[in-house]
Image (cartoon, rainbow, N blue to C red; front, side, top):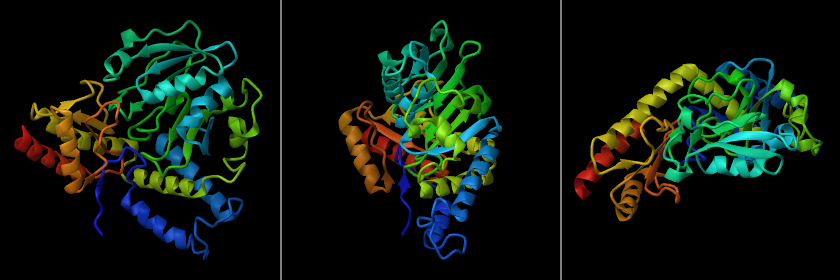
Length: 361
């Protein structure tokens, strides 16, 4: 059976060679006669998987030893409250840059634990761009500055990290562009991402956190909600999402084989350019995201009418393109082209877009 071009925003496409490896590992992992889904998380084979996955992650992103690498459950949505619960003291302020639905949700959870200052927001224009540096108004003494690096729904992406006040560390929800380009982890106190777009399947969350922050949580918390619990136990305090961790490790190794983060960024830019060139080639389509803020991961666009948008999605599905319907808050279409998505799919979609515009323009 041939593979469909899957433009889903997530859970999203995984590398085909990783899926083939997983097929074999489900039946028999590492010659043990036991599949990866069946191995005890306390046994030697799986402990080795966790160690190798962490090592590959550190190598891929250049993560220094003074950062803990955690493999947790609950998705990025759990990190919306776990981050401030551990690190935002009562009465203290955290600054949040609001660029979409997920950062809005992060703000709502942080308000349960301390004060939140919205240092910038693009809500007035339906989050069609990233705030300019001169639009950001930091509070006087924030504990940390939080941003969402890529906005899946709206198709916008920070081209580089915002610069917070001196001495203030960055916190980032990088769920939809994690490891899609080189990153300086040392600029962050906490970097977290649900795996299901770029680095693995749904069900496992990567959290990279500075060890000095882990060592001093600001309040007493249930055991499972403490970063320190998971850092001390090597992400094995409880039964972890073992298959997700295994797959994440295989994706890290696949990414290294693509030339690491520099190599994958080059591929991602080439893929995205194919689609943005197709949008620019005709006035039939319009992009939601403004120039300078456009995502390499999620290309959002529309035709001249909602009726034509619906017709486009239906015709695209018939032509073998899945997952192109845009989010209800934006409408139109959304082509999600994460790390594992092939350039051939972008080329094929661009050709389809040209034909559709010729027929309906």
